[in-house]
Image (cartoon, rainbow, N blue to C red; front, side):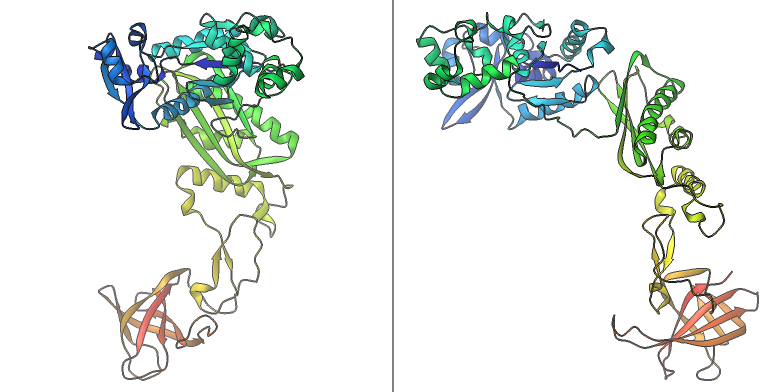
Length: 497
């Protein structure tokens, strides 16, 4: 595919921004200025101020002498860069490869994108019209190279499409400044009467390098496509990303579902081909007014099942607010992993790796919260609260076996809670205990089971555990901390079924 680049130039970037915020300045000559070395210097001038002879870099006092009614707006530090970055992100609706071209422009890699708008001319017209509706003066151009697009955007008629392979012809009539040259080089060229690109573009690069330094032949090579320039996207491009611009604005849930299904088909086809599945996925919708909305899902196991992934997204589609309508949808998979072969029956020993379990858990998590779904494995510790750990994934293997030789409660408290007990005989289980203001009469008791402190972790007493059943049949797991003394401490640590 042939590379095609778009340059967007904002000749009045800062002043257009000010007018958007203060519409009363629309028909007023004004400048944006900031102090520098004890003087107030013009950082940007609007079109009306430029007509009065005022330009960037002038001292505000001199500007006032030229035009006393000039309005002066204080500059915001870093505003231009913030604006350009925001505009570059907005342009993601036209191409995923959008970058800032300081101090007043953007560069887009529009390769393979223009046909979605009906051709390159309409592609550029759409950009210019929409940015114009936002209040920005814009000039745009498209060419095989960044250098040629940059030149035509700034020295063209407003919208310029340079036909493939025609950058040499397009450049020769432009001034030398169209090659993005520094002022000292431009001054030397002007002194020698080489004020047009055509007057020196065909000269040997060795001669140009000797006379003007390396920058001039370098810029010529870039503009003609002999040296490659790379667009650095304002946002990193996800390797697994699919885009779907819409011919008509999408305003209904049905339309959003159709777009999602088409994107999933494209993404899952790639997964199938590459033997991977997604673990997380983001579905973004770009509204016509610039608003960007998104929903996301996660899976406990790499998945490439279109049907399953669609179901995870389906109940979240109602979260979108189309308003006037969406014009672009993007589906990204930030996290993918290799897909393992499906194993075994769903409830046998190898069932934990079965895709059916993973998909069931994914559906539950998508309707609640994945934080509430956990898998636990045995850990090699004596104290009950340390004897389990949370698994990192569905297929993580246990480092040890589950103990089943001793009774353990179905609900284990994260931290034992202190209780009050009545004991008839020392070193015997309690005959009653109080927990959270309620008194329980003990009918049956079994124990003690002594569990020693893990001395390599911390010092302390052992625990003597008892399985207790009250008169209503409820069963509890209690323990006494350390040997029996005049003031023994008792705790509740869990509940049996």
